Image 1 (cartoon, rainbow, N blue to C red):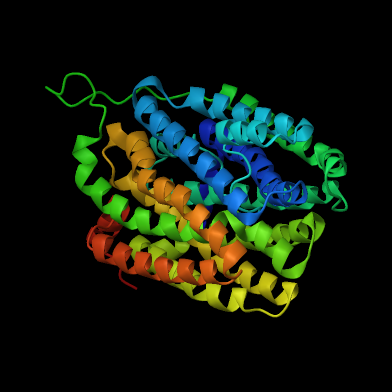
Image 2 (image 1 turned 90 degrees about the horizontal axis):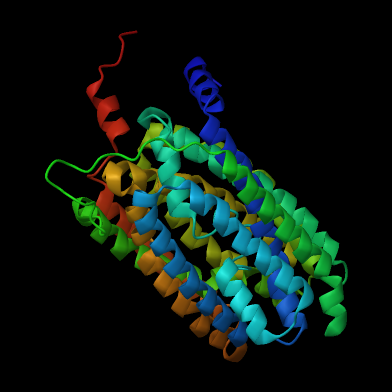
Length: 425
């Protein structure tokens, strides 16, 4: 680590809010990772097929989209902290419900309220619908030159938390069916609830900066982010395509490993733990790559690699080979995740950051909610491969769109760096 990077990291360590958010993210990511491994396997063992898992993913996706949008629009006026406290507690309640019930309707309601069990244990970045408020608070308490580093450290905490959550998936033990599955999976669901509760309680110690004043003559702060609308329209276009791609495979990764190779939660949890250990390193490199190549170019490149790697992964002859390819894909994916988050809050108007963060993801949440039903049907009736191939094609299209829309819109720190003359050697 160079002297400049060391100094920037030391400044972040002295930032109370950033420290609390990072630690809370660790616990929340551990909870999401553990739930992401055990939930699809548990539901399959008590009788859910892929189409029913798709229906549950749709319900959770719609509920998450509504909550995320409401939080984004509200937190620009009401503050960020309340949502970082309350929303993790919703996930905790969902964990308790899953620990003691096997009623489809009860599980559907709990999963929807808690945004529970979405994705896989390797997708540690998706911590829940409070993320627009979290991103805005990080941006408000971090200098622009250190923002990419802050989001990189946050992604690092996610990876480490998800590593722990993946290892905890072994608490489920063997994979019985019926009532025996409810008893076998009770402990991991209760641990999920405990981890989410800790994340919510930690957020009580946050100290919010004052809300930025509205521009002169603007009167009451608008509900929709009008000043950021040109940015938002471009994000809607790109994110809707990416949402379709992620919805085709994201909720089914654990289920796919379980059905394709016959492995249980312990083996899948170990794989995801290894993946999250590896991706923890890649998140730390995100800020450096953005400084060297440019943020938009870096995001575009990693999205293309993600798309390509889906093909050999689903064609792999064994769990070990597929897991190794998935590991490489997730290492690449985790580089782009904090940079995309950083870019959105950097380009949005300061008074509209949470609203833009929430609304920018609304199309992707909508398409992500619809796609699992189609994917579930394809998994059940066509093949376990086709949804992944469709997702790869969609992500490649998304990468081209992202570059086309944003390559001429660098964030402020890149503009400042270009304007600063380099010292002569």
